[in-house]
Length: 220
Ligand SMILES: O=C(CO)[C@H](O)[C@H](O)COP(=O)(O)O
Ligand SMILES: [Fe+2]
Image 1 (cartoon, rainbow, N blue to C red):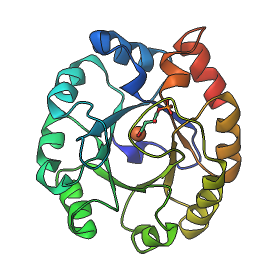
Image 2 (image 1 turned 180 degrees about the vertical axis):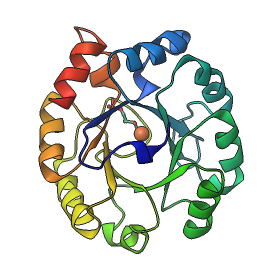
Image 3 (image 1 turned 90 degrees about the vertical axis):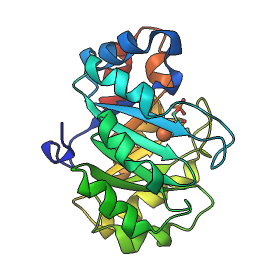
C-alpha cells in the first residue's frame, strides 16, 4: 500500500500497536485493519533518543504477513540512517523520523524514497516548528507530536494544535498526522485544524467497546 493511494482530505486512522497486547500482536494488527483502520502505526524506540525501548524491524517483518494496511513507522531513534534498509525489507510503506535525530535530514528523506517508501518528518513538542518548513515540499507527511515522545497513554497537549494550521498553510497537499493522546474528543479538534491522519494507541486498542467503536469515534 502506498500513501499516494490516499488523499490529504481523507480521514485515516493509524492505530499505534504500542497499546496493543504484545503477546498477541498478529490478531491485534489484523483486527485493526478489519475494524477499518487503513494504516498501522509502528513506534520504534531505541532507549537512547527516547527513554523507552519498544520493538524493531524484526517484529515488523513478522507482522507484515498479517495485514495489508499501510505500515507507518515512527522512528524514535538517534541514527535512522543506519536502519532505513532494514525497515524497507521488513515491509514498511512509510517511514517518519525526527528532525532532532543525529543525521542529515535531506539525506535520510532521499534514502527512504530510494526504497520506494514515503517519508515523514516529525519533531518533539519543544522543537521550533519552523525547523520543519524547509522540508514540507520534500516529504509526503508531517507528524505533529501532541505528547513528549516515548510513552503511550499521555495527555494531549492542546498548545500543539496551532502547528497543524501552520503546516496545512505551508503545503495543502501534505498528509498531516497527529500522535499522542488522540481520542474521540481530541480527534475532532485536530481534524478541524486540518489534520487527516489520526494515530491512536490507548483510545483504539483499549477502547471499552472494541476496535470498531474506536474506529467510528475517531473518524466521525
Ligand atoms: O509515538 C508515540 C509515543 O511516543 C505513540 O504513537 C503515541 O503515544 C500513541 O499512544 P496514545 O494514543 O496512547 O497516546
Ligand atoms: Fe508514534
